[in-house]
Figure 1 (cartoon, rainbow, N blue to C red):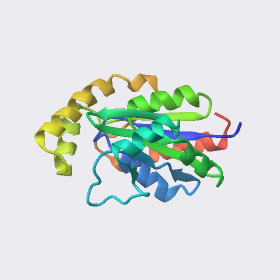
Figure 2 (cartoon, rainbow, N blue to C red; figure 1 turned 30 degrees about the horizontal axis):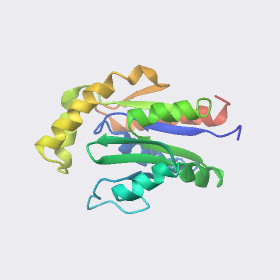
Figure 3 (cartoon, rainbow, N blue to C red; figure 1 turned 180 degrees about the vertical axis):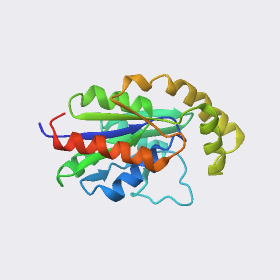
Figure 4 (cartoon, one colour; figure 1 turned 90 degrees about the vertical axis):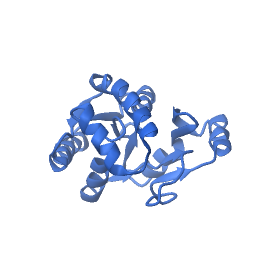
Amino acid sequence: MDSLKIIVFCGPSGSGKTSIVKALLSIMPELEFSISATTRKRRNNEVEGVDYYFMSPKQFKSNINSAAFIEHEEVYKNVCYGTLWKEIDRISNTGKIPILDIDVNGALNIRKKYRDASHIFFVHPGNEEILRNRLKKRHTENDEAIAKRMERAVRELTFSEKFDYIIYNDSDLQLSVNSSREIIEKIIQTNI
């Protein structure tokens, strides 16, 4: 499909990529969220088939073996995430543009498979302290889990230049959303 476009938001955990994606979905009806699969435990406010497809490690492995994923990774020990081919097809078949909220390695893999169709945004939190504070404010992880996320985040921040667009989300979420929307509107209107 020559006209396929895929919008990808990636960045460290706590960078604000999910907040930006949710805001964009609320104001851009031409986009539709690509639901990722994960083996992590569901948080209280998350809904199966809306936020994620929650899978057991056995189900996830079965999907890997049947080549159901475009990309997948064990992001943290025993916690896997992946993008299903069927999600991109489901969204594309409705005439909408898939928007993904994934990790940095997943975005690099999307780039390999959809080089011309993918438009990848790296959400940069500004600095490590902002990131650490955001992770603590979530109250979803203990100090050990936050330390693991921070260790990974420091590594992921070095990848920012590998992507098409860098969106700084250090203090003003609405500014980050507006900047992202302007770029996406240009992508939709042109053949870039």
